[in-house]
Length: 115
Ligand code: SF4
Image (cartoon, rainbow, N blue to C red):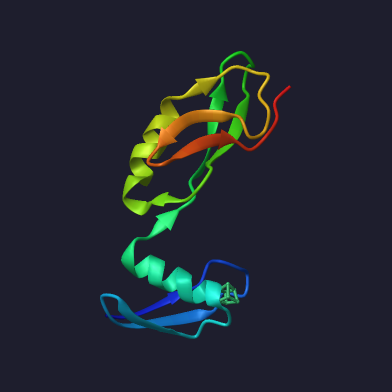
């Protein structure tokens, strides 16, 4: 493997380089250990936190922002987005409320309170 990527963990955006194979990956360019771990994860099992919005059925023209409580494997993003698109909730909703439970090992939670 010989791969270059930009670290997205913090705004510094270090230019990372990954070389090696299997369990013996070497990361250079990272200014901190988080970037090294990010690069290894991105090359072995990339994940993302999904953010979106869900319709509030009992409030006209109202949506609530949501996100996955933890990152999910990148290959499941489309499946999660389909379930989020099909979901709807009723207000009131507190930030942190579980909107969709147990999707690929995590929940989709509200990130905003709707009174
Ligand atoms: S390597 Fe560390 S300092 Fe650099 S962008 Fe990633 S988290 Fe930020």
